[in-house]
Amino acid sequence: MGIKSFFQVRKLITTKPVVFITGLLTLFTMANAYSLDEDLYIDNLIPKDNPHYSNSGYRLKPSGHGHCMYGVYHPASCVALYEAKECYVAIHYAASFHHGCFLKSSSQDFDIINNDTGKTVASLQWHQGFDLPSIRNIKDPEHIMADVTGKPVWYSAKNKLNIYAYK
Image (cartoon, rainbow, N blue to C red; front, side, top):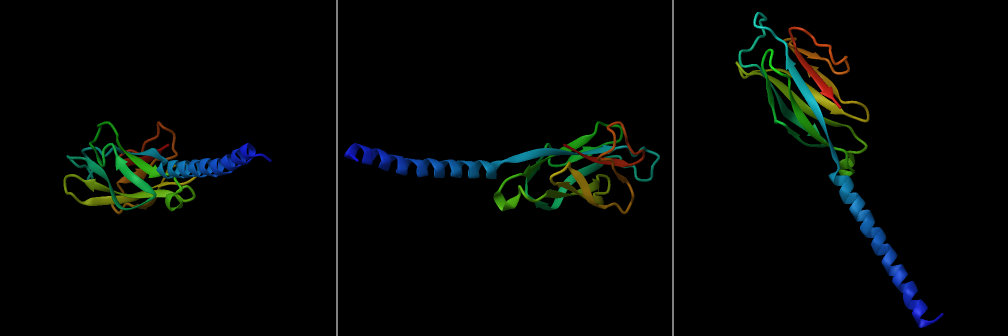
């Protein structure tokens, strides 16, 4: 084996691990930055003659604990007035290796606030696992909310705040 061959083998041995390690670090960084968006909607179908009617509407606002979350956007809360277009928040959640988020479910707590009184009237948890997004842990003491996730698109619960998660 000549000197030239020795240098070629040495170059190959030192180059391959560097390329491998650089590629591995790049993949790890990209995996930690990977995230997805989902939407959580609120549609106010509470009419004026209903005792739960609010002149200023209801607000959907993130609260409490979020797991594997990067934030809630568009806007951070939305106001649903009766017979107005539905409003939604965009949920930006992690699907990365960071904290094992690619193996675990993501979740975020939300409050529904009556804008006339400022009082929280219901709460829920948006949840995203390996399946479609869902609504969980519903606390609705005034019975003003209806989870219509998974129902046909044309379905709505009358006289309620319709809450649904879309993928």
